[in-house]
Image 1 (tube, helix red, strand yellow):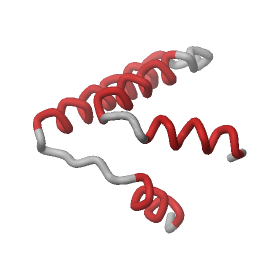
Image 2 (cartoon, helix red, strand yellow):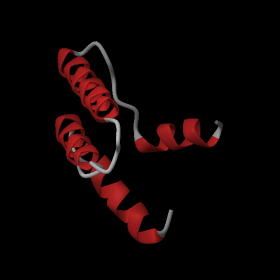
Image 3 (cartoon, rainbow, N blue to C red):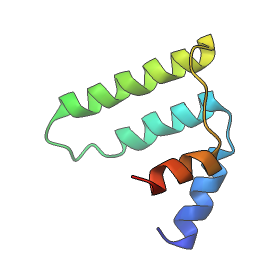
Length: 74
């Protein structure tokens, strides 16, 4: 990614979990070019399920440092 995208990502990751999940939904909706609406619907459902789990306390968000380490190891 470039520095501009990194900056936007850092700002987004600084948002509270419910605002991050709302942002994800908006970003996914912006990718309406997909020929398969079921993919968009599936992602929307996944985001909402994760948002509900965060609110219920059954799931915990990772800090960006830990997430980046995990992604780098893939």
